[in-house]
Image (cartoon, rainbow, N blue to C red; front, top):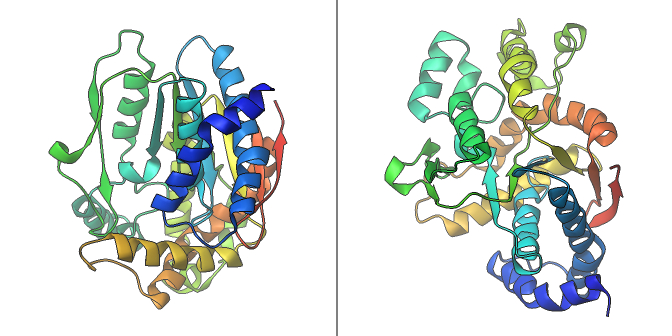
Length: 307
């Protein structure tokens, strides 16, 4: 029996249990098994090999458009790396590091009204992210709390509800839609991409500020990541369809219907992400260490390993 076959037998049950818990139904058992064998297990072996070459905690950036399934994928990798490879894994989302609603309201008053909406670079708490990275990387590890954000209320939870990280992880998967994003040239910023940019950012002040954030604070954070894994979507039009599915899922999970977005709200919301998402498709398709090519039906088409 090969190592990959052994891995499959040991993680299969937990993998399917997780998919059931996440209410991922719209595909056959055969398709789920193929995905595990062809994508998740080979990627887990690649991650483990990189960890063994690394002296300290391995930091992986895991990105993809909204609704691409990166959070689900990151948690599946956690199951495999923990169950078969016996690694201590921490999966954290950049979404948990959003600035509070109060702070974003102040930003919308002082800088630009579009900063009230979470998502783009500038709406995350950079100091919290830095502290998270430093706390993970320090040799003499001390337990600490990492923030937790509630999308249904569009605000950060109180500190007593934050994640407790008690042991130093061997591998950290830091996932989020904009992780690894690079700034654009000023020339590209001039022309609006959608109606949001055209009518609500007429002088391009908002997108210039977002771009500046990518050039400075976010570049420093992304430089602390060892390898990038990128989920590439076939086209941006799918983001709306997939985000709609995601919002319906959030509606079912949430006890309160407050802040769950409607059809039209989602259409507007994804416009905030369009520019950076399209640029990431160009950049990370070429620069990421691992690229996972997605199909229109949300399935995985192929996986490319660069290093």
